[in-house]
Length: 246
Image (tube, rainbow, N blue to C red; front, top):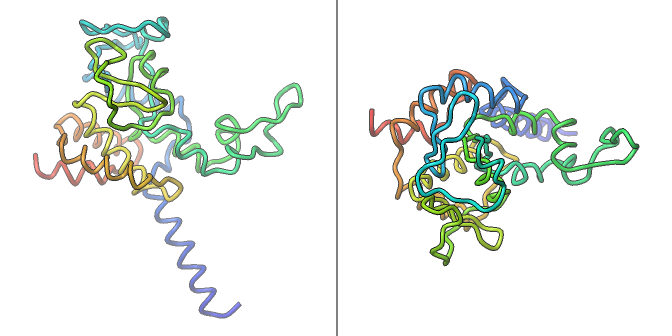
């Protein structure tokens, strides 16, 4: 190998390492991330992202007036921590998710792949999954129906949850207006921070529109700083928007 090729390889390696290092590198536990969010980030702002529902320290939901759901009734009573950018959207970039691993075998000797295998075998995936900048409280039933669907603008005017204007149709989701800016800046953060994740052109265009239409709030800025203190890395997208309201 020539000197120039060696230098090029070294440069690419360093660039890749720096890019990844800008993300979460302090906590690889999804469970620990959820506990820290509840106790050290949302302790004085117990409201869900999509519906603005109140919840207590035991994660019990106080459903807002007019909220309805006909499915996942038990999950409607509890808060769940949702990946705004679904785990599958970045998980598919990992071979363990797509193809499995020779150590991903259950107690009956059957091989498995997907999220469980990536979570078991790949440290980089674990860090991405536990990134608190991408985790938000949601009513369990809303989290369940949103699933791993991408966000878009839907032609239907009907909400799936009564007065909470969260619409889900044909494996797509349209969030309430008040959540769109936060969602957009989270998608943009994940793409900027992790080389493994890329939005489609259409999704990127929508997120840039939502970012402009729904400006950052003081709570969003405070949340970002709290997570940075706990996790060790900033959400530079959010922080750059917060400069205008300091």
